[in-house]
Length: 537
Image (cartoon, rainbow, N blue to C red; front, top):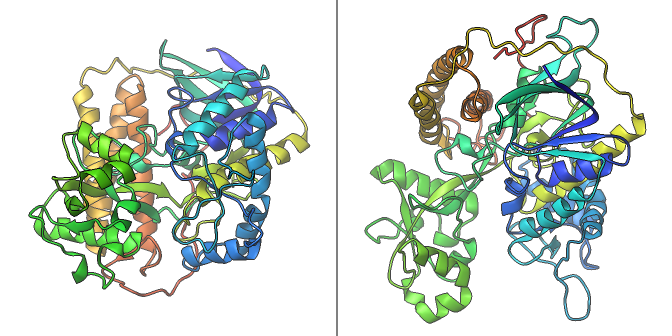
């Protein structure tokens, strides 16, 4: 089996992965892998921007206060303050890569403001900030010879010393990876491994995340023995376009701000039954109301109605949204817009410090893969990219300061055993679909103890079936993603079962309005045993 040696192994090509690699390249050889192409990541689809205090009328204290309010008492205030105060360094990193953030005519920053913020503090590049940042970072990455970029490469599992039967604390020494263009499985051996794999939105039936968001980082870390925290806090965007051919397209909350009202499929308004503010209620209330209507009526979607504003207004105010809807045969000027809430962001993840440390030596986690204590029970708008930049920057600084010490641990060859080529892909597709549907129905926006119990029972059965399939057949990208999805699904359910209250993004009918336990929910990593099979599940 081929082994590729490096000093730093980065998994993921979103903002946190690219910034990690660019900084670490100054300290040693970096191998960066991404399972599709570099731009196929959540960061690339970020519309809003990046939080950073830069207005003289704003302050760190104000940004910290806004974040703490959004986090519903579960943020780590020291972490919040550190990330807020380090944000400008991350913005400077992007500017050095060539990102051109919006400016006013006088040359000052054109800062945006979003829900939950008390001041303008959002650096942006129009409504495609993530795409602009990714383009410039990727261009810089391509010009950095110390970074070995490997696209179309999926990480199968991390290699840890405890599984190898070595003495001492459990330590990550690299990973087994699959080259999806050649089907070769080989090992990457590294002194330090950094997980920057994004979130797990695809664990739900409806999500605005790209297809790559299958929770790989959390699942990899958990199987390596790392602690996981706060997985019950999944943020849902209330209005994602419902159409069989539409993926990830959000109908901006600004549409409701301009007069759109939420209605059922017959055009009957329903929001007044849930909140006096009607369709202008906050995001979490709107998402729960839509979810409630769908469950009550059995309808697969609800609708937005803005027909009264007229075609001329809609084309001028929402040109991109109007055209996109039209592409799918929906004319906002005369048709109801079908919408559903969609999984948007995971506030939990691998328990990590601001500079990336996890409970497993040699393994760091950054960005959405990590849970640092910044978001608490609910993420404040545009704090996510800020966290990605800061955690990546500080993690690279810590690792570089340690000095390069190339890993020498022997990694055994990947064991194929009696596995054969898969001949029934329908099994993978069916289990994939079942997980996403049961998570949507039982572990979605509104939960109950009974639904969680049913979900856990079925997920455990599915994970057993997936394990059997995994060992019977040669690994494929679909099988690996299914395996990771199932792990994340179980972790979300178990975390939700531990929180006997409604707080932030976790709302349960069995404990409505009860806010009694302002503590993180921590789950231990998989109990790694010595000398397990190299392809242990």
